[in-house]
Amino acid sequence: MSFDWMKIPYALLTVFIVFNYGMLLGALIQKIGARAGRRHGIPIWQNYVDLIKNYGQRTSITHGVMFYLGPVFRLTGGIGLLLFVPTIYGSYMFSNLSFAGDLILALYFVFFGTLGMALGAGESGHPHAAIGITRGLSQVSVAELPFALAVFAVALQYQTLSVTDIVAAQQGGVMNWTLFTNPLAVAAAMLAFLGSMMRPPFDVVIAPQEIPIGPPTEYHSAYLALMQTNRAIFPIAKMVIYMNLFFGGATSWPEFAVKVFLLYLFSAFVGVCFPRFRVEQSIRWFLIWAVPLGVLAILWV
Amino acid sequence: MEQELKPELQIRKVKGPDGVEFEVEPLRDYYCEALPTVQHGAYIQIVEDFFNWARSHSLWILGFGTGCGAIEMRPLMTPRFDAYRYGIQWRPTPRQANLLVISGYLSVKTLKRAIRAYEQMQSPKYVVGLGSCTINGGMYWDSYNTIKRLDDYMPVDLYIVGCMPRPEALLAGFEDLKKLIRAGKAEGANQYAEKFDWYKSNQKRVIHDWDMPDYSW
Image 1 (cartoon, chains in turn red, purple):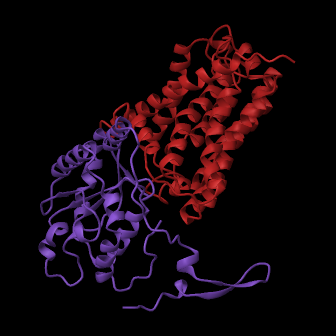
Image 2: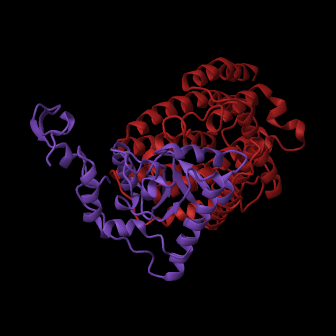
Image 3: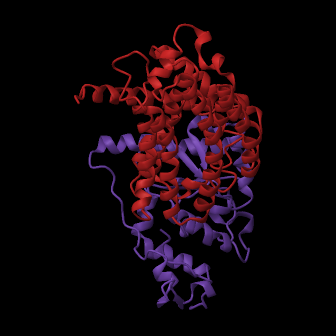
C-alpha cells in the first residue's frame, strides 16, 4: 500500500486554516451573543490574546499524569476529527486523510475528547470537576444518541460509511442534500447539535454561574490554553461533519466558511433565545424530542 | 499561639481498602509543603514584553466579592459599562484568574479565604484594592474584625479610591493597571515570594484560627 506523504503537510495546512477560522468565528459568535444582550462584547482578536497569555503564564501545577493528558486527549479529539474527514470535497489538498470507513471513526472522535477530559479532570480531585464531568457526560451521551441515529440513517440511505461518498451523493443541486432527502435525520441531528455545542440552553455543564465552570475547574495556564486551542478547532471539525453529512459538503473555502458560520449561528440563535436547562431537563428533552425523530429517520429509510 | 486543629485536620489512623492501617497527617499529606519561589520571565526581553502586552489585554478577574464594593463590579458586565470590550473577563475559579479584586472592607474571616484564593492563582497575578477600606480601613477604621491595610497581607498593585468608586473609576483603574503590567512593574507574585515570611507573620497575627498550610498550592 502506498501512502501519499504530501497529504500530511496539506492536512496540517487544513488544521491551521480551521484553527484561525475557529478563533475568529468563536469571537464573532460571542460578539453576536453580546449584541443580543445589547453589549459590544469582546474584541474579535480577544481569543488570540487570551491564548498567548495562558501559554505565557509562568507557573502551573499538576495533579498527576492524567491531568496532563486530559487537555492532550481533548485536542487529539478535535484534530483527529478534523483530519479524518474531507474538509473540502473534491479537493486533493483539503480532503485530508479520509478513508472508506471514516464515518465510524468520526463518531468515535466526537466522544473521545470528552472521555479524556473526564479522566483528566477526575484526577484533579476537585469536587466541582467530578460533578461537572458527571453532568457533562450524561448530557453529551444523551445528545449523542439522536446524532448517532441520524448518522446511521444517513449511512443506510447512501449505503456507505465513507464521508466522501456521502458528500458525493449529495452533489448536483440543493435538492440532493440530505436536508431534503431525509429531513427527519437532519432534524434529529440538529437537535443533537445544540446539545453538544455548549451554548444555552444546554451549557449548564460549563456555566460559570453553576458549579464553577464544571470539568475545567482546576485547569489553568498552558493546560487551559491547550483546551482553548481545542475549543477553536473542535466545534468547526464537528460542523464539518454536519456540513458533509447533511448540507452537501463544501467544494471551496468560501462555501465552507458560509456553511460553518450558518451552522454556528444556528446554535447561537437558539442560545440567545432560550434559557438554560438543568441537566435532567435536557436529558428528558433529548429523549422526548430528539431520539424519536432519529428512530423515525431510520424507519423512513 | 497554637490553636486546636479542626477534627478533619488532626492526625488520625485510617484503614485502607486492603486492610492495612496507616497514619494520615492531613496538613502534610494532603497539601504541598513547598513555598513559593521567585519566577523569572522569558529570557529574551522582547518575548517578555510581548507576554506582558498579552497579559495586560487579558485580565481575568476572580469572581470573588469580599465586601460591599463587589456591587460596583456587576455593572461592568452589563451593557452600560461592558468591560469585556477592554479584555476584562470574570472567571469563577482562582486557577484561571490572574487578577484578584479585593472589593471593599475585608473581615478577618474573609481575609483567610482571600489569601487562599490569591495563593491558588497562577503567577503572574495582580491584586487591586477597591475602595478606601483597603487603604486605611475607611469607615471601618476602628472595627474589631476588619483589616486596615491590605498591603500588609498581600502585594497590592493598584488601589482605586472612593467609597464606593463608581464603575467608571474601576474601568480607569484597570486601564492604569494595564499600563503597569505593560511596563513590567506589576510583579506582585514575586514580591510575595521574596517577602513571604513578612506577609505570613502579618497574616498569622490577625488570623488566630490558622488551620491551613502555609502556602495553598
